[in-house]
Image 1 (cartoon, rainbow, N blue to C red):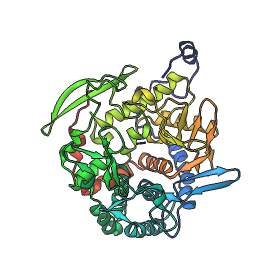
Image 2: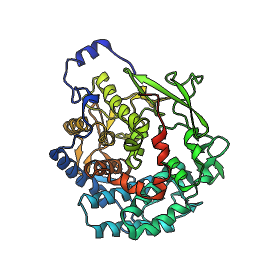
Image 3: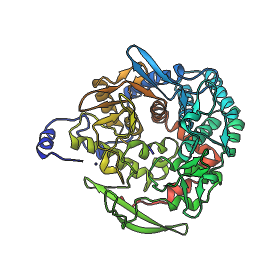
Length: 451
């Protein structure tokens, strides 16, 4: 899975300085889609997809986890994860639909990746967390772990590919069908374990109990497949129970019964707005699942509405801090990788930091498009543009840029752009599959206590 001090005098001064998002976000139309912005995004997607062209092994079809600019040379990490593989596959679908590559090239690329996936070592059809890109072997020196969340993203990518290209459907469906999520499920608790350590022969002690985080994609898919019961959806925490006083706020809300399960529909409040929190307070926990799930369309009184609030509050948090840009989410640093967040939006909270990451802006495209456009301009002014699109992050205090690109983050940018400019492209493919269709009522029926 991937705290806030307010200086009154500084804030008072900041209120006099126009910020890129200075107008009221909630008053803006989420239908904002001018031709000029669409063109800007498509141009950016071309640079972004070049990452996948240059750093995907031509023999295995597996994309390197990250590259970093060291002087004039690129340092390439030739390892990959199930999530990276999914981001490459969905980015390839996106690139073809945006006419960056031909269908012939897309099919060739995806067939190479599928051939590797079919032969790669697995555990009950589920994939290990790290593989070597050059030969698709398990990267054993990084541990032999089976991650629920990473496999969920791989399943999602396979489903999208199978619907985008019917000629590949038999192969993608076979892989997804064999991915047995029941092996990671704890029926006594009604929640997933974080994963399985193959070397130890044991499931993790922790569960994925927080609903509004990125593992909900795997939960949705496992329900859609029939690997776990539907009531699993209701057994995750919207907030922690009121009596758990270690959480960052004591939630308010009522208990509601869904499908025979009592659910505490709790919420937090920040700057007068009610919201359901993520675990850490980051953007990808909140909005990454919406790349494939029709949360905005179907969850109009729950997930979709909360996504809107969350994007707005991330912007409000940056404004409160006096920052010239927004978008807090785990990302690369100049020397590694770290968790960043709008801390008040989390249950426990990742560390408070002035680092923003490009992918967070694009995840918010469907909810705050005008502000996203202005933020992209702000990021460019902070020297984030590079050979493969926007560099991964910038520290707004020091202005230091992490001159790195991550397959995960590049994929989030590509898919988010495709969904925005091509009208829900990736989401439509995902929901065209029976696995995507079956649990849709779960999205429709819930009402969060945030209205």
